[in-house]
Length: 476
Image 1 (tube, rainbow, N blue to C red):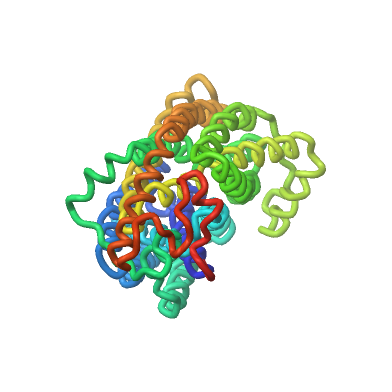
Image 2 (image 1 turned 60 degrees about the vertical axis):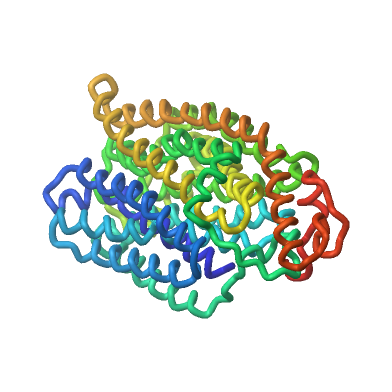
């Protein structure tokens, strides 16, 4: 589990490296920030498309070689990005890296879902999802701190860390499909996905809403990669030099996204409510994203007085930023608002992961996740691209940094349809869980020649009680 968490975080580090360095990389290659932002947009899209092929291969074959191959590809692309001598070379390197990144999330999700029992899915998935959020934060941090004097260094350091994680993964346990599923206790389950299973996947109505919700959620999240730019612009507006402004932007963006660590609470609440009603996880996600919208909007407009040593060392600037949380009421208010908003929206992630595992058999989970990730990728790329256009359009009426604040606030309204889709998923999840539960019992009965409905020798349970009462045996 630790190795999977590290792998999931490192691929998000690679994604998060570029935004804090838009200006620096653009200056090095003689192109504008928009050209470098294009690389981020293309990375989102290609990784999302590639994830479908990797996920299908993982659901169809041995997952370990697929995950190792994908990791090696993104490591090579990230290292190449740091060594690129021109903009076309950098863009091609990002494309190579994004292709490999598609494997990590989709295949590792399927493996992790087989490591944990239904009653703990929300909690453990929150750690796995948190690793991705931490990776994005770390990417912002590494990009800004290591790259403010030499933009190439963060790419080379991240590639080296990915290579080390790949070596560690070679020695991990190869998790069997369905290893944590109560219905399959004591059964050697080796079902594989087939090309004609897609209609079956899409007939589960909950899957439709779980896949589509990312189209709007990721537009809002995609816009948030511009947080370092907002805070950098605020620093420049207050007279700080470019190098110090980059440090300030990265430090504040990292600090303000710490609320994502509270996704663990969303997973715990989802697990608890799921034991009372099969709608539990979906309702927790719906309420969380809807309640966060007003807090996001407030966050972008609270004025901030930045007081750091201009031209100071990285440690001095970061120390001043941390000290301002306690010395400046406006910074403290911004931090509290950001943490609370991110805590609410982070309830989305672990419950989305857990719901995919709840309503799908083991051999479909990687593919369903990749379909959701495809929509997520287009949404996130769209958010990243559209918000850049919005910033330029707003600049005429609202000079920087106000144009960034107005644009980011407007894009948070995309959380509203996301919440509605989670609510719709809550209306269909009971039937889909029940159907999957019954199908797994029937398969287990055929494999072990036991009566249908006998879960590992225990009495059969209704779907509402499955997560609460079944633990899949020792070690699951």
